[in-house]
Amino acid sequence: MGTLFYNSKIYTMIKEKDWCDSVYVENGLIQRTGTREQLSEKYAENITHKVDLEGGVMYPGFVDSHLHLIGHGEKLIRLDLSEMATAEEMDQALRDKARTLEKDEWLIGEGWNENNFIDRKIFHRQELDDISEGRPVLLSRVCRHAFLANSKALELAGITKETQDPAGGIIVRDASGEATGLLHDSAAELVKRVVPEVSQEYLNRALTTSIKHLLSLGLTGGHSEDLSYYGNVERPLKAYKTVVEDEKLKFRAHLLVHHEAFNEFKEVEPKYQIPFVEYGAMKIFADGAFGGRTAWLTQPYNDAPETSGVSIHEDEAFLKLVQTARNEGMNIAVHTIGDMALQQTINVIKKCPPKAGRDRLIHVGLVNETQIEEMKKLAVILDIQPGFVASDFPWLIERLGTERISNAFPFRTLMDEGLICAGGSDAPIEPVDPLLGIYAAASRRKPGEDHEGYVPEQKLTVFEAVGLYTKGSAAAIGQEHNRGFIKEGFIADFTVLDRDLFQVPIDKVLEAEVRFTIVNGEVAYEKSTRSQYVE
Image (cartoon, helix red, strand yellow):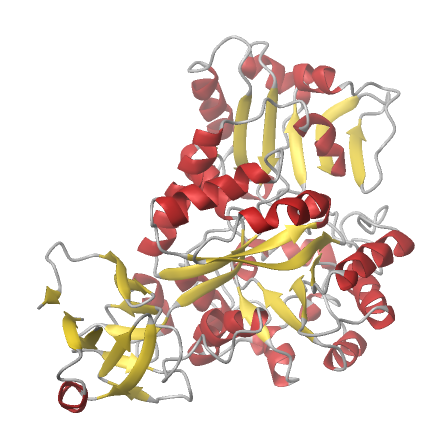
């Protein structure tokens, strides 16, 4: 029958300050909101379970609009370099890991970030040779648009002095033309394709680890892109079937389909109709990232005037990909960080607009006024990552210069202009915690810093920031009619915290704890050790 959730301040998100204290759910759908007394009387014969929320504060279920679910799990179970504060610390961590490996086993690391180091050091392949003692090495930068490989890995990939840069990629070289080991964007694919394929059990474990972690952070769902990174597309799909369907780990996964996996996916899609898993737009990369100076800009980088970044696709090739998506009735989801990449994407959508629904522009890191006016005329939503503000400043000012920095991650302007925005983390590239995203959107600074914020005029209110992860994420996939609010007929996905985010000082937002994560009307995670169900 049904479940009554009570003893809570329940924010519906329909409008600011709109709340109630109880909600009644049947078959995964909200039937009514109101007081405990009202609902208990109205549904007396239907209520079979009652959940005491212990005075916690309920919100519509937080959904991360852009992450890589399996990749996040890999970060949790692999060597994580993202928090290393010095090159010496990274060096030692790599040496320690290498000692645990077999002689020919690959040394794989996730998330190095030279901007965390005072000297901004980037390891050379020969240094990695010494660290790994002959083992091949591949280390992903935090942005996953740059990688480091040692001599053995380059040898296995067939990369020599004569190897040409692949389309959409750069093999960084020294003065003599030899590869340094630093590979940008598609150049890294030359090495990735010779890394031994991970097992199916590994993928299952990474996905399980990821989902359990996300549930503990109050996330009821996520929009992910995993299908092109692990060999045949059926391998990640099998992981979703095993973890979400067979093992019944409830979490709403909306999967984008990378264009390189598109043909394989269309062949096997009918076999993988999985509860709580749905398929979305075709994912396309237009450029790289600010960190590695591969985001494609209209003007050169302020701190590297010899480059304006990397274009992944020529205009005609990009258009053909979009036409393929349209022929299948699909929207597109485009990674676009630099303003030149954004302009290319806008131009392509104008030539080949969606037949229905909205296209998704992911990141939108640098945007000018003319582009905002153009986007307002298109059927698009903006998939933004507030955590980038906390991670990319202040070094982003060096990359873009003071004249352009006001146009970087301009959340306030985008929302004031009426553009629909959804909130994501881009995990494992950034921390997945939605509270960090909410904090960064509203404060425009790193945790622990005490200043008015980076480009403070672009701050959102906390209500707007929470909306990114609720109604915004729902709108990103055309589900705003039944997700993202707590109201009759909507799905019963809820996030319950120990405090009211709308009442506490902004610096206290990060101290909030998740008490319950509820998916489809059932408790998927609870911090309390005692059962909350009362027959």
